[in-house]
Amino acid sequence: MLNEWLRGEVVNIRCLFTQSLILTIKIKMSHSYTEENYIKTIYKLSANGVQDVNTNAIAEVLETKAASVTDMLRKLSAKDIVNYVKYKGVSLTPQGERVALQIIRRHRLWETFLVEKLKFNWDEVHEVAEELEHISSTLLANRLDEFLGYPKFDPHGDPIPSESGEMKHKKQRLLAEMAIDDAGVVVGVNDSQPLFLQYLDKMGISLGTSIKIIDKIPYDNSLEIGLAQDRCLVISQEVSKNIFISA
Amino acid sequence: MLNEWLRGEVVNIRCLFTQSLILTIKIKMSHSYTEENYIKTIYKLSANGVQDVNTNAIAEVLETKAASVTDMLRKLSAKDIVNYVKYKGVSLTPQGERVALQIIRRHRLWETFLVEKLKFNWDEVHEVAEELEHISSTLLANRLDEFLGYPKFDPHGDPIPSESGEMKHKKQRLLAEMAIDDAGVVVGVNDSQPLFLQYLDKMGISLGTSIKIIDKIPYDNSLEIGLAQDRCLVISQEVSKNIFISA
DNA sequence: TATCGAATTTAGATTCATCTAAAAATAAAA
DNA sequence: TTTTATTTTTAGATGAATCTAAATTCGATA
Ligand SMILES: [Mn+2]
Ligand SMILES: [Mn+2]
Ligand SMILES: [Mn+2]
Ligand SMILES: [Mn+2]
Image (cartoon, rainbow over all chains, first blue to last red; front, side, top):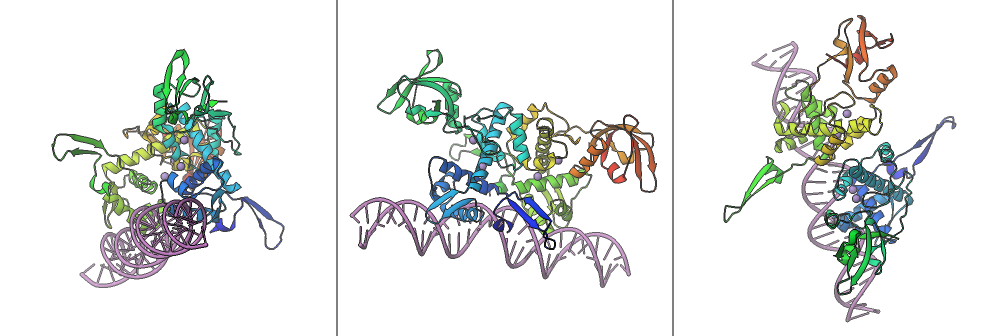
């Protein structure tokens, strides 16, 4: 296949006779729906400071088997998307990282669109965005970005990469790691599962909500927190580990 | 597979012991990307008054081989999406027609979105919509419809089916079939290929343009037409067969 | 009606993504 | 340092969608 020989993105084709005419073409490598999901998963698993992602971790996230993961890693390795050493683990190449950031960009732009323009609730968007993120047109992503006013964060507080792959790094800490009397504003969630977001809705917690730690219950590490208008409630550690507060 | 036994959309499950508790569940049959493209193609080929669509016609549209089409027709037949008789041709069942209309609905809504909101030109939208039409969420289609203000026609003048599958039938005739001195307004195109639309752009013809037939050249059936501000031009029969004028 | 040619279907192979089960490598424990 | 357990890879099979080539059917023509 072409892909196996043309690893880079820019190729020069020189006229055989005159050696003068040079055609410089930019080759856009395309990836299957499945490949994209692997790339995104490897990116997310290595984002948490992990150097080499292991096979089983990928298999778990993608709800597939380790053997399938191995097959795909060999394939992505041949495409120069990942650095893969048998039994040692896998990491994205700079190429692969660029691809991952584009997928994440599209995912988060679509989520923003769904919430901002189509009035979806923040717990309804992830699944749809999992499909929309694979629409390949870069013009579409860029126009959508423009239409939304170049948003920097998605509805869950996650940063949206720019066309060139840069994103704002928000200063934040986990609610679980704050001390008594500390206070701040909710700027993100660590888990976008509908059930968790629905729970937050029910508790009246959303991005922008001000929270103050009133007490910590040592028995199960649950937190007593204060919201606006002297409203008080207790949340489990599980929950507090999934809420980001402005630093 | 479940699909082969559960042909309808609503199923009752009765408790074996008490015979009293009845679970009524609505089963949403899903179709692969590929199946959807076949369904849409069969719909479009039968839309022109054709009763039984033949295998080769489908193969040509989908740029595939007749043998592949046969395989898929057996599959869609088992799913009750088409009526298929070997060697005789194929037509959509009422079920299949509903599915087709939903795909076309999504295609045209997305095209409208791209032009109206993202400032795409009308020649840039078809290819992207070919991908977007397969995003399955019906909530998405309905919210998009609402966001766009329930448009009745897409950027090429084609009618957009409602959620229930109804669409406005526009009174129109082909420019090629008009007589000298007849006049009207462009309300649609019969071909959405970029090259054709780009040609129309170049000639200053778009939806809403007023056109009057000035003369017909018998030699090659080309047409001399008049636009606003006494602008005159000659178009080939090929072109005149792809422009719809208000009746 | 018999024959020919086009359209269509069948047969068999290929590629991609997946699986299970078995083998191999690595890491942890004795 | 063996032994054991875990992780990972290989081997081999399956199902979906495709292909080419051969066989079959249909419909038109002789
Ligand atoms: Mn998401
Ligand atoms: Mn995905
Ligand atoms: Mn179109
Ligand atoms: Mn399509």
